[in-house]
Image (cartoon, rainbow, N blue to C red):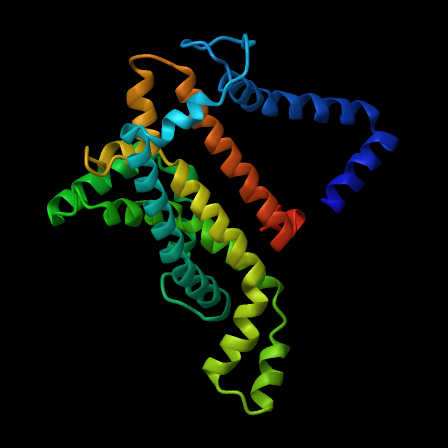
Length: 272
């Protein structure tokens, strides 16, 4: 946060027009979330802006609505599984690619670009065919596995930034003092990579929680996640209850950013 404030002061002094453009862009990005938050506290049965009053009944109604509560639990489960699976895979892959001459290394590097080159609908169809043949469609853990597969490169990139910044002489010093390979990794290497691991874990959790397109393709009625439930609801009617659900997502995203700033540092998180 300190680095961001310093950058804003520099823009204000040296580039006032650029600062104005940056502030305008920030307003453009924040305004939709702010409108959703405001709409969600309106007492009307239909979406109105600005609201005619204040109420939290739409948030209270979410707790007793199984149509949203159960998919939310499904989303939390899938996102948590996605995060837990990605940590050991991401750490091992990032270290391996950085330190060892691995066969088909260029192929792995190409795979890391797939989230930006292959449409998610294509990934979803491929996973649907694959999981259908294996018999995993209808299992909630399979949704978490699918989210891990499509988002894993983001975890690897995050950890790789810490691996690239790691000083290998620290490991050599530990080994010279008698530490074994596992002890060196546990007490020296992994703690040094923790900023990248935490950044990647937060990113994986948020991506898993928000993923819609792949979830829409591979989930069933018994494994429906919250983004899919929201999509099904808005096809019939957009109510303030939907705005309340969207506000919950906004709040979770803000909490994740605050955690990243407190634990890792926002500047480090944005550069991971």
